[in-house]
Image (cartoon, rainbow, N blue to C red; front, side, top):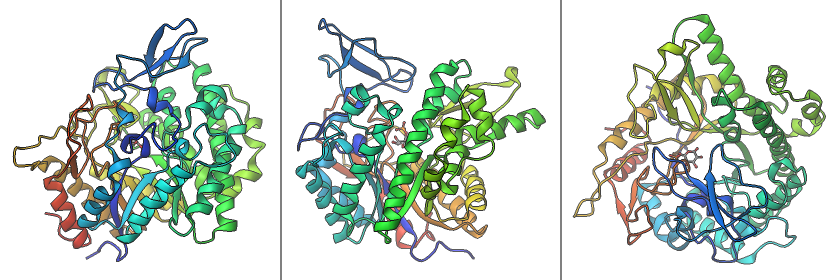
Length: 491
Ligand code: BGP
């Protein structure tokens, strides 16, 4: 009987912008999420701004654009859920103690770039920001919990986004590099596992799935991304040369596309999507060069290959030590328009799969998809794998006695633990599983709190009202048992 490896990293995952709060405390500067409102499963988050004449407005986060002359601004009358997150900034000791109680071996978190460099272009870091993360890492070490740190998780300082041209500007590579130099040196004795960018494929997704998205809107995304690949490669080189104890990883939004029918055209369509939405990114970050099919993608968007190929020498140093990804659901794709009922997923969209059930936010449950993709990834890269996000976003009810009966979440997670075990039996070198939003936090997609993923319930609602007190859900006790038995006792 195959078992999870002895030192398997069981744990949970979070991101500063969704969890930390303290958005304007301790010298932190703003990020784009600080001017982004909350929404619901069916409405879009809005980004707010002020015009030179003082009038204010908002545009949809996905597909919208800031008008000429506008400046990002926090505007009266809107609620910005990321300002508070779920208050890790003030409650990290309490939360980490709860993680220790569950037996966590690993905790994934990100460093807010604008907490260390408020605008992003300063020479000297903000000492209060540095101290905050030092304290958090120290607290984790106290309980022997290994930190897994995402360097950039949807969190570029607003000044870089608005005034420096964001990742379209190659100078941002140097700013990111300097940020990494500082945090590597500062935390070299506390952090070993690093991820350079969260879901690096996410920024292209809108273009990939909106078949009517104009090429001119999608194409710049590939150029921005190229700058991120270079930035990532440079810091991987720095880490490998100066900090040999570090382990560097990529982080990709997991995409699984099945052909909806056995029409070979659907099979090719699924292959195309897997390349454009998923493999393109990790092929660069795991192998250190663009894959052969990249030329076809550049051609599709009218991009000059020379722009990408000129940096081949830099990219080759960027090959990662391990591969990490998020996995929530799978999607189907088809060329038969008449057969499709469209459904959403994490950063994706596809045809409805008749064999699967769907969450309240319309994401499929597909544990077999996790086993499938683990096998695909391991045979492609032959490097250790980490599942660094997985979970079920659901409505939870806090009972009068402080309990939360989230059997649906346990069912979802159990199936995925079983799937990982099967993948290990298939020969996959899987070393970590950190479930998403181990303490309830703000949803990236909708800005909601009520889309909860946690083992730990946080008493706060979508207007920021509540005590912020923490409560153990049924899944808390279940996961504790899973960890204690190293994945054997999962009932
Ligand atoms: C991933 C992000 C996370 C997280 C998760 C769940 O894309 O890396 O930040 O939010 O998805 O998505 P959502 O919050 O939209 O439910």
